[in-house]
Length: 245
Image 1 (cartoon, rainbow, N blue to C red):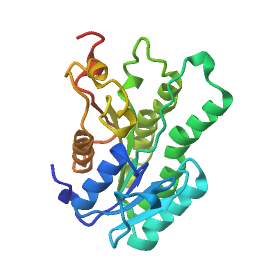
Image 2: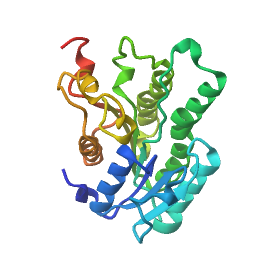
Image 3: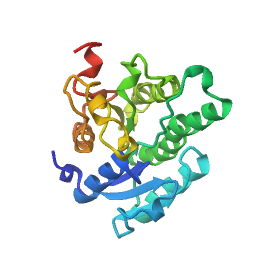
């Protein structure tokens, strides 16, 4: 599917400096979108350079002041917001009993606050337009935790993304705003660069990692499908469907 389906629309992508966020940002730009990309130090990116169609905003998306700055940048430079991709997230595997209050606060701030604050700002603009689309990136581990993988806090915090999407899809459907989410399996990103890829491949019945381009495909499908609302698409080779393969 080609991003030109929505050429000249305006997108915001959080967590855009690497991995899935970078891949989605590049695909949207190639498809004609005007994009505001944000991450903590995205202005230092070697892969993204500011242009007439790309604005970079540094900041912690888990803080309201960053969310305001990001939404204001989109409106100032491009006059509207058509798509918000809530991609920012942190993954901190650790045995449950070893998580600290600091760990909890950090993950809540990024994985929950990073959706909450910027979505509030963006929806305010989308309601004026009577149109818009918000896509959140979760994880299939919410549906299919793995024995031996201590990921309770990532699961707790990322499980909010599909739930947010369903609730907000109903709240704002009359305003012409859609909410959907994508739950990837293990994606081949720099996050896993030093991990055992042969082991990771065994965690999917497809026998391989998910490609960033496949997450892009899911995003573009959702963006091009006006009657898909409140949906969560799992991109995991079928891992969520069974415990053994």
